[in-house]
Image (cartoon, rainbow, N blue to C red; front, top):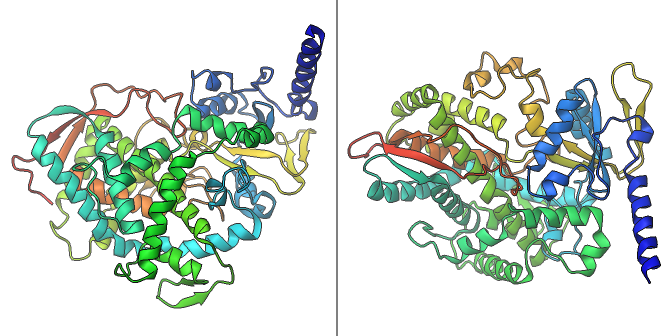
Length: 510
């Protein structure tokens, strides 16, 4: 039998070698891949974050318009040229309409129904149905709800912080974001700092895609979908999916039966979608020919929670970190916040008028985008053009080629951002914003598949930060920030431990 094993190994090695010659046989530069692991050896062994694997190629091939990378055995193109990024994400969107990883309903009955996984006309119809949930008018109505959650955090801190102390700010930001999403999206009133065992908070902690196990599930579906399906591997465990489904279906039913007063929240958008209509910002109903089951709607609710939970908290955490290591920036921001009315009549407008806060948020999103890379997959043959200007080599790829947009790398490219690793909010001032090279700033992606909840996430972060930074001063016990190799998003390996102290004796501001 040993010869059968040897034959199988030799066949697998031959197949791996064949797959890992995809780019070199077409004149596309790539770092040397490892059999079976491609360019993700260090990622798989937990030695580096996957954006660092992308960054190694990005830095090595500065003279190229694009280069190749192997997600294990899957050839993946990484564009470096902003104009090529525009073509892929916007101009030729029809050729790259799908996300890179596709997990269908047959593989994961819950996750396979969400907006990210949907393709073609199903994706377009669902996108249209959900877009009103994140309009400016809806966010304006949600701002007071966000303020209530931020006030609960402030009260909690007032009871516990009377002098400087080191604390893990992630604990309070995760609780805040959970409460905001629960309130603004689903109509649940929870206080996760006072009641950390509430069901939605416990579910969220288990469902968010942030560790190596979850990441490897996505890579598994990318490389061996049939095997993953046979093993019944699901992104969210069956037990947790059932709990989510029960929770959100009860919220849907309560809204349909008018047991809960209608609110301009996400659940109401889902109820409207199920009735075949959507609402414009002016409140007019428009017909939507697509009909949805409760399972379809629950999948969108879970996606909204899972996608918004960790990323929004991460934005707030990195913001506080950058303020902590950039004291002059923090002080300038506090001066602006001190001029803000204590109890503005229109909180939404008051937040929008905070120009320096907006500049700081934009700069933090440049340094620490919500995701380090955005993925796409071609649905038709595509000519990517020459590998570099004047080159005779060019990649003409059949449908199915995977693309990773290197957001983290391009955000820190000194060609586009002088002193790229420094926090300089003035890059986004009204006078200098026009100098930014198009398609080199992509914190929420771009094109038709850009992040649908970006406006909501930024507003939720600003409402929290306007209160927290006005009341507290932060400093960092250390300036280094090493990326965690076991996190899906850009998370520091050593956590978010900062020195926090009150600015005022009784801290009654705002």
